[in-house]
Image (cartoon, rainbow, N blue to C red; front, side, top):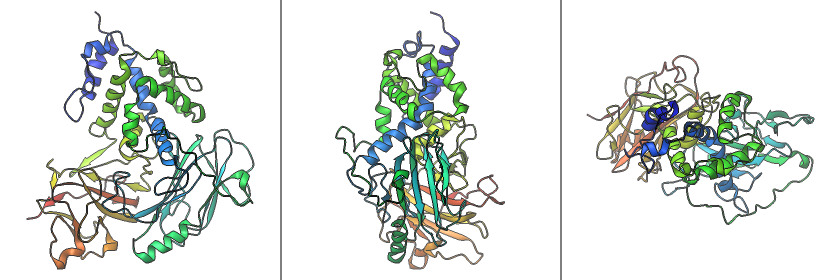
Length: 476
């Protein structure tokens, strides 16, 4: 048997990528059995990574819209979802929820005709309204940073649309038929502020252009009993066989065309029969790849978090990236963000440093007491706001006696005499005089996330690395 260059590649780079977080190989057979005569395996794996965002967006859309009427975090296609309150520690719908902004979101399809999005006067309140295409790129992002907080109306158009934009509307051109509007509105969480934000949410409008000037009520959704509404979307995507995955990807490419910059990659993918605009022949995929290709390819995606070559920064126990929202041809980074943070903003709008262990690689435990100290004048530099959120090992909120899930300046923490801010991260109260600075932790393992909305682009800034996140340290 001769070993080709591609087989050699699979035995080195891809072999390293095949080792999962559990320390075991992700496939269920010998390496040579996998690569024997499989010169196209590396091409197929690259195609899997390339298509991961589009397939995940579609599976997310199916689950989030598979209801008859708007309820909680779901609503039919073309119907606004208005989240009215922050979740509590019992919430399990999505990981890493936030307690800073209330969502106003919707999935809609601009393939047949454009849709109108009307935003009320936000009266100076911070908000952002990113529009994601089927590939997870944020193709436009109205909001406080970009368009201000006055009333505004947009016409979201699909690929190839060339009609006339009505007066008073700004055209937003979506590269794909699938659009996910993922609006966020800042809210302090008090009863009075909830009421104020609810009033703003109720003034948002979403309707097809053909309904302009008419009374429009979104039609009821059709519930598909075959759609799995319980299994997490990522698990559903990862469970697809190679043939099922590429068959779906080929279908999606018909209404969600690739970018012109993808031409070199698509030329390679022709080797496995993946051609935009054409159905996929499942027989083109080697039967031995059915499970192994998805498993190995997903391991490649997840290992990019650790071995990213600069796409992810690691400092003082924090990991973060400023390469989100717009990805160009960085397909591995795009797939990683899809897997761990679907719906991520452009870095100019938000950066999300996350700490799963301290700077010495030790897991955070509630049996210890920790501090996060920002020196005087060194608070997170933002024009919007910042917050530090506590999560348990599963990335969910932590039940605590003061119902506090995140720490920010709206908690009115006390500054030290030298102007520094100390946040007490621990399970038990640090004492009545320090509770304003207390971020309650569980008794066992926990994780932390620092949110920076509208990071300041002037020095110091997290965007260029001139502002460095301090380490979380053990008290004493």
